[in-house]
Structure formats: structure tokens, C-alpha cells
Image 1 (spheres, one colour):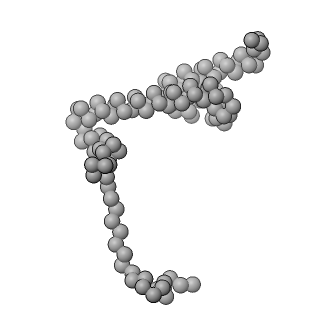
Image 2: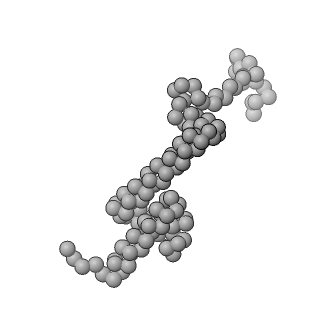
Image 3: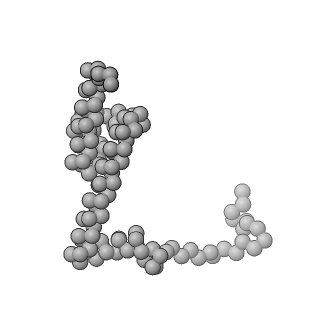
Length: 119
């Protein structure tokens, strides 16, 4: 395998630092980039051009979601009603835990558009 140039080695180290910062910040890209001293545009270019880096970022995002789910479930166990309602609205829609909006039509559109809505 070819030896990396100084620039390539520096970029590799920066990417490693960004990934560590992402882990510390639960996947927050802005915070991680700021800590490492790169712009978000640079970060997203790396994601676009480096599939290995993109996969590692995806894994960190999944870890962050797992962390949030664990926190939510702890809150439910501790009797947090809002957390319980949120969970049910997201996970138990088939059981009827969903907010529905009812819309009542007060116009009779038989025979065309009412004059007040015409040009």
C-alpha cells in the first residue's frame, strides 16, 4: 500500500478527531466541527467523498439515537407522563395513540366554485 502524503495523513487525523468529537457531542455536527476547527461544508464533503468516514458517522448517529431512546425509557420508568405520551404517539399509532385533526367543510361546492373564490 502506498505511503500517505503529509496532507493525507493530516486529513486522516482530522477525520479521526471529528469522529471522536461527534461521539462526545452525540452526533452534533456543528459542535464537533467547531471543536476540531473545520467547517461544516468540509465535513459534508468528507461524508460525500469518503464512504468509510460516512459509515462511521452513520454509526455515531445510530448510537446517539440509542442513547436518546434509553434516556426516554428511563424517564418512562420514573413515571414521566410526557415521556410516556410521546413514546405512545410514536410507537403505538396502530393502537390509537395518535392525534387526529378533524376538518369540517362549511362550504357547499356543488355546482362549481363559489363566486367569492373566483378571479
